[in-house]
Amino acid sequence: MARILLIEDSPTDRAVFTQWLVKAGHEVLSADNAEEGLQIARSQGPQLVLMDVVLPGMSGFQATRAMSRDEATRDIPVLIVSTKSMETDKAWGMRQGATDYIVKPPREDDLIARINKLVG
Image (cartoon, rainbow, N blue to C red):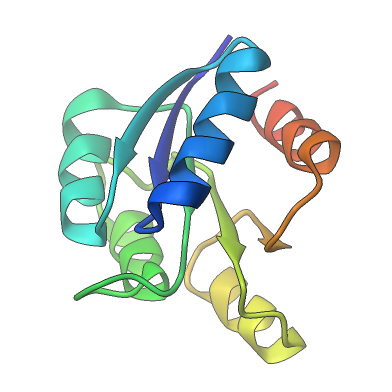
């Protein structure tokens, strides 16, 4: 269905989310840090990015802001998937350019439904 870039530093979360996405028929690209994720987004042009917030080096908020300001990536929707659950975190993520925000751990059906809505 869609090529999705997963930017997630937790090997467990990366494995679980990848399994769910593949089961739903999506192609998965992955990166374990924001810098690598930004390079993949620029070169591979995914239809959606799933972005963790707490990452080594650049945070997911910073990476989302960088993507929204880069002509090559600004049209790629970003779905933040984070343990940061306060309304201020969600509001900040949306201000950085995220299209949607979901708190970890998401339910599989909820995550897939949100992804499918964003990728059409």
